[in-house]
Image 1 (tube, rainbow, N blue to C red):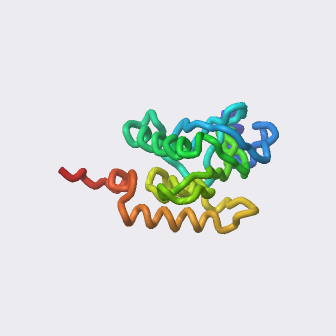
Image 2: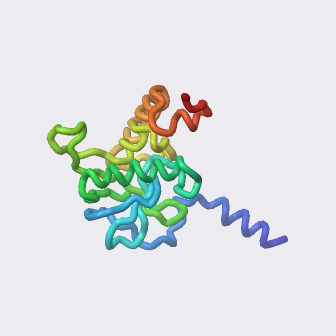
Image 3: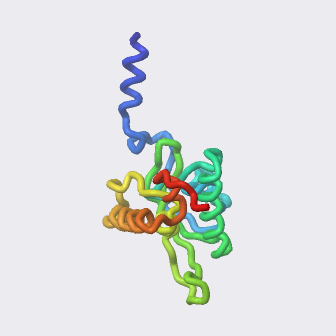
Amino acid sequence: MRWLGALGALLAVPAAAQTNCGELPKTFEGQAYAQSGDTLAGVGLKPHIGLWGLKAPRPGSGMAGMRSRAALDDMLGSAGHRLSCRMVRWDGACRALAQCTITAAWPAGSAPQPHDIGVRMVEDGWAYGFDLNLAPDWDKDAGEKIAHFEALARQARKGLWPEWLGEQPKP
C-alpha cells in the first residue's frame, strides 16, 4: 500500500516541473517534418517539437489525425520544410514545446512572409487550443491569439470542426 502513496505523489507533480528531459534547446532552425498535427521531427534535433498552445488528433486515431498531419506537412512543404522555432518548455512526454514559424507566400501569389504554424493550424481548424495559460515570456498574448482563431474556425466550421461538433456530413 505504501507504493500507492508514492505513486500518488509522483503523479501530483506537474509535467512542466519534471526536469528529467535534459537541457532545453533555446531555438531550432532547419528542416522538419510533421509527425502529427501538433508534433514535428526536426532534422538533426533529438527531441520532437510540440507546437505550443495546441492539440491535434494523432494519426493513429483515424482520418481526423491523418488529415491534421497532412495539413501540417502541406504547410511545411510550402516553405521547403524549413522553419524557425523558439523553445518554450518541455511537456510531459519530453517534447520541446515551441512557437515555430515558416516563411511562405500565403495567400498564393503574395510576397513570402513569416507565419506562426501553430496559430495557422488552429485558424484552419486542424487543431485546437491547449494549455493557453502558460504563454511564453516573450509573447504574453499568445494564448488569446490562439483562442481567438479557434473561435473563428469553430464558428466557420473549418477543418475538423464539423466532425468535432458531431455534425453529419452533407450528402
